[in-house]
Image (cartoon, rainbow, N blue to C red; front, top):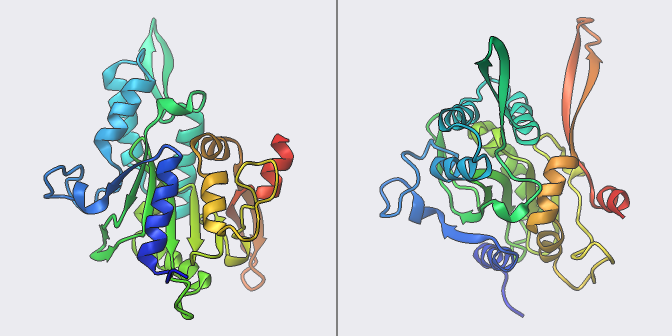
Length: 286
């Protein structure tokens, strides 16, 4: 039996993603100062030039200055509330970025798409490992990020199943650490994935550990054999470009609920981001 190490799991995941059509680059090869650098600094989270090219390709009839304004709106999402930022970006993603202009005395808007949902292969799918991010003097390096058009949409945190202390729960705890130390990454995140190489589950940025779910089918038709690693099933069934875009567009909601503080009597609106579980997704599309 092959000894499973974290680096083996990473390689395994990347290879499956490549078979599904994801291009691969190592984080260090596009890091600031590298020969093929795509980032000006480690604080830069989005691969901006890739986003600009995608926006130009997807919106050929929209003027270049409106395209650039849309890119800038995406780069400048900022409030102290991580989930608010995430919801703002999700709205841009699904409802397009509205850029106002005047015509014949009327206020109109260009609607700039960041992703081409109707034609999945008009987008660029990139898997990057060891992508170092520095925020507030904190230096973190998520295991794997999946970028669509230069935007980090999916985060993987992998642990080593051969190490009894490196559980899937530890992978979840690591994502919580990232949320506290590099919250900027989560402005753009749609799905978080945790795995120890054997078990594998997916959840949203606001999900508690119990809300992370397995994905049970690689083809959407029948449940996969329990002898196939859950990581392989989830990547194949959930992260192929067509299914992933469908999930992002149609199966993520931000649910609002009112919570009253028993001591102060103050009512606050709480937001929870919900991602459809496997059975909900396949029941709906069946």
